[in-house]
Image 1 (cartoon, rainbow, N blue to C red):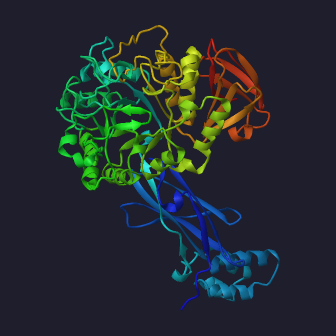
Image 2: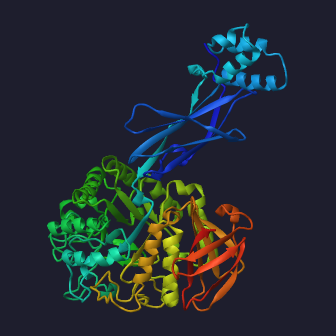
Image 3: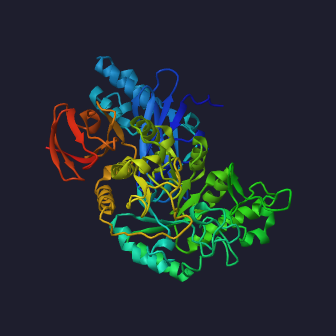
Length: 624
């Protein structure tokens, strides 16, 4: 019986929770695998990185590079959507050890005749074993000999880990949210055909995902009225999130919007313009949803026999019934909910924003999303979970492609630096992809309520450049909607959630041209299409925030004024080494927003921003 293998493999990374969940990459990205590999004594360790696509039988291998302190690294590129496996293989190699020591002995001028004989016992080589040959010939034969494969009993392998490969749009995307029913903009109920007419507007602003709130029939029982009034008046349209009526539920379309054929036509027209339609999936029902009568076992009953409506005390949502994920009939519930996704996938929808996933069972999401992605690896799921951090992270681990973040509530310099350092530089980046939004139909932050036009500009510049994926709720954003329902509230006054809105898209003060410019800059600069290179730079003014992103020779430097009332100035200290610049190098910064060009030299340079002109610089760094 051979002795136990001597090599030790530890700390293989990237990995999530010891391999319980896959790490995530987008198509074409590199997976850099690192590990600590070592053995007792002084013998030479060899280690390889092995990887394969989920459907392949054979593993590919590449030698890992020694970095320092028994730390090794190698990388592979993911070229297909779906799942890959990877692991590390290591062994103590007697021939490599012998050859290493042979070189040391030769450099020391020692006699090598016995060493050549030892080597000939490790590898078949006629020259090496031939004592009539010169020492130099035998040495060169040793150095050029192929390394024999290791003995099976000497090899140790780590457990296999997984990487989930998503479309590029999972990493880099620009979302525009709108209510289809307000697409006319004149106060009358719009149709999908009206949305088709709106597509050029969305395309011109540079968005590649057009996201709709629920498009299903809306219940009439306990329908909410304007400004979330408990009772709707005749003719009021209700909240799209009160899903289901006698006409149907989650697989039906609100008749006022059009037919299934109209919807498919819209999806096709959007694709022609490079835009994917994303649908909101909200697993909840109005009291009129067919599920309520057909499957009462899927809901929680109150002591008086009525169905328990949704609550977040003291808030009550009488127009919404949540599903009971602890029901004894959970299997049939799970299958039906998965079939909702499958239905819309059959309508050529590939992107879904999931409403409040944190109020549904983790086990359901892990099963459902894995099942769906196994058949349709091109799918993208955005988790709308404004909840506690551990829950948000758990949802990302179990399969959500992207995650809403706390960006809306991170407004000070310290908050932004700390939060985006966490998102881009800690282990959570392996599984949680941020999608940042300065506003949503539910959230009008105080910053936008009080900061005026400069606040809207700064927040969208931050969103579009801090993260590779971002979104806005429009036309509210570009038209600077800032009135809350009441002081201290984050709800919009006359919220579009409960009524049709009139939108004047041609208003002179619209931010549409600025947003279009931002999206063009994002498309033209690879540095803005990834998150992990984000670095913040010191500046001697707490109201100024400066950060950079770098992708090979493409370097973007952003500066924003967080004071929406007053001009601010200061000297920035650039991390030149991190940017790949020499200590005293002279270079040009080209402001892609204003067109201005400035000559800078060295690390210390001056910045001044007036919020009443343009409160942000978006520099492209050009080396001379």
